[in-house]
Image (tube, rainbow, N blue to C red; front, side, top):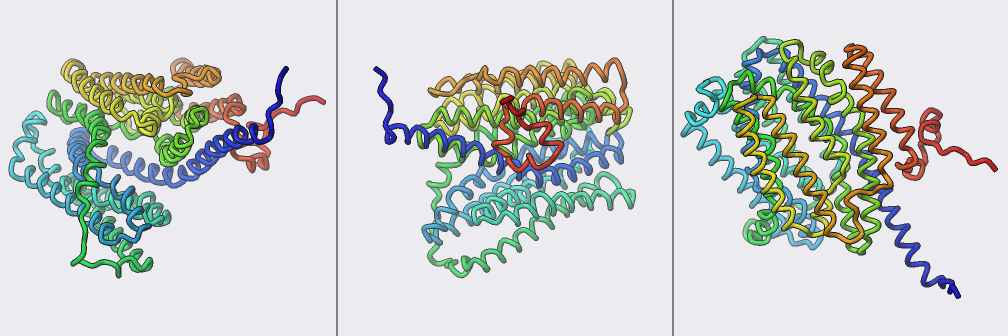
Length: 527
């Protein structure tokens, strides 16, 4: 005889299910809003990059890109990841009114940045010949590095200030500085250099000056905010407390993630300069910003994914985490698809349109890297999920393995094939690293390495990308025609995947728009 569950027995299950659905819906809605500012920032930065490529000669652009790669390499270690400590500890100390530790944490972070920055800058000026040995004896990148290296501490300060504003819940300041002010100042600096027809070295000075102005403005804004909040008057230099052990115990273990980022996206450029020349660096570096477009949506969704997954983990709701994981994965996959189609399926036409005939061969590199980035996108937030689940040891192991593999592959392929070898090595490393992260999901009960419920979604995006690619190869290379085709195919993908995305549940207000209602609305069943 089947016993009917009582209301008290059924209610917890229903509540748990409703909570996981609410968490998924809230995470996707909130992350979608963050895309607005991100698109503005990326658009301004991308325009600046295209202008620089068009303005400079191939060798000059190669030297410029190489110098920025060195800056990016050192920036990865300049703050020891202390911005994470700021995001975690400053809100706690503020909430507990432990202002001695709050200001102690800020001073530790700023002091560490200035100390490490001074050491890096000093090393560059003491032994500049080391750089020339790494770039096949060319001198121009050395001069650029000696200017741009000052961006290492300024960028670390900028990153820390963003974390501080986030700690005090000031999204307007983050939006204005991160998405508007910073990119705009850099664009203005580049336009001024182009207007006065200055050299690449003057562009480096202008770029650095713009960065410094933005950081100084941000510091002033932060001090004003502390005054308005009444926090600044709590500063007492005689009673400062420096929680050094607590802070560095938290940040140092997480540096392996930074190590993967830095080495996987810097060693290729540095080795290209060592084994070849600045011209080869230019051919490779020119397409990286376009390839990085594929990460745009994922980076925005990541900001709210971790806390949503963490709350479900605290409730041991693994089914909810699985739903959050795969729902987020297909949302990010669909929203990123137009960018993937542009940078992968019509890579040749896009490269010629943006950068001209001298960079025509770079379309192959763009296609390879776009595939690597989008592969990471459509498989979801596996790395973040593993961290939420506490599988830090596994994450560290595969991070180290990925770095070693990336370096070995670059050392094998770059001497043989130059920029093509760098593209193959980096893409292969990204894909294998992602597969290892995906495999790690098996360690958690209730999580699926692949959810077959969403198989149709992956078939749809594969066919859609292939249609645009074949159109470019056999029908037309006109970027406007192909762009229109990408738009049509992307809307078709949205239409075909709407039921899997649960668009009407996540964005009920979208039904008010006639076109969108047709694309994502459910068909009424016949009565």
